[in-house]
Length: 369
Ligand SMILES: [Mg+2]
Image 1 (tube, rainbow, N blue to C red):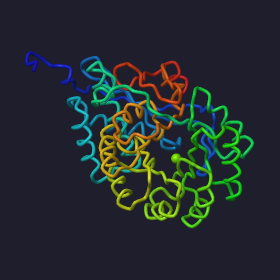
Image 2 (image 1 turned 90 degrees about the horizontal axis):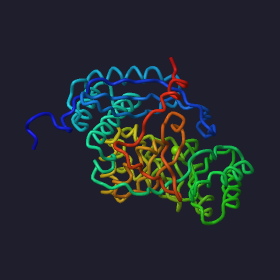
Image 3 (image 1 turned 180 degrees about the vertical axis):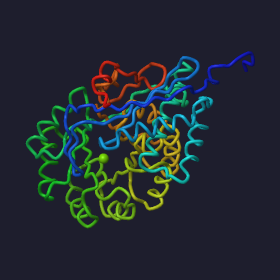
Image 4 (image 1 turned 90 degrees about the vertical axis):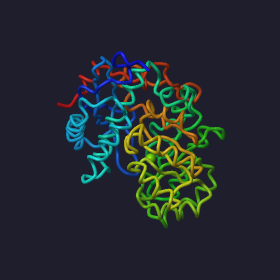
């Protein structure tokens, strides 16, 4: 132990800054839950007294949440200013602060933004990629291309599916939830015919069916060889998802709308899904993810990620039941070096921290006053 002065692990948080940006999407996404054309993000910068700064972004989904999220993160940041850079302690301090407010929704995402920036700063302080700080090694993580393939009809979906294989992807995700079962099946078959039998095909209903209709459509889709059917019904209807999972041969996937590990416990208890795919922000950041990964391991559930490919690559590399990384390019316009995909795998950058740094010119361009 170095007792002669502050070591790298004894950094103190000096300030947390939150900036709101709205980043245009290359491929606006049409889903069963609505259309998304630009991504509202809050960028978190966590400065320490050692000159090390960690960063993270949080996705707000709707512009109406952008300024409130930035304000919430800045206010929460003030709670941990002058605290030691100890992500576990900070995480639990912030969770306790939310006892009465609740840890779902914006509060959960705000504390996740701070948590991810804390872990990034700590990994940078140690001069190692985040995955090494977490006890793993950088290794390629299987990824599927989740960009595009919204509710655009069979012809457009077939064409776009081929485009999405560029860069060596061997797995893609198609959005379903057309007005009729026949249209869902037609799109799946058009995409399959376009990309061939070796490409793995995930599907996502974005919560748009009811349980009876999900079972009816799912039975028909059982013949199509889908890797999974995601969120066929309302995300928090664990009992409904369990009934669907029990009825179908195709695995049922959910998890992007789980608020922290406690929601995963409830979903597992209900037998809601065959696979789980937490969202790094909604599951409460790196600290929450590690607990979720332990739960998934204990219950033998393959675990994938939702959005946040840059940090999810590190997290999946230390997830015992690592399944698939969801690749989305939403943050690319504001990053200096986007995460690379090679032969269908996300490549963890060999840089300290999670590897993200802001392209400040782009941030200025997209910043929302
Ligand atoms: Mg989804």
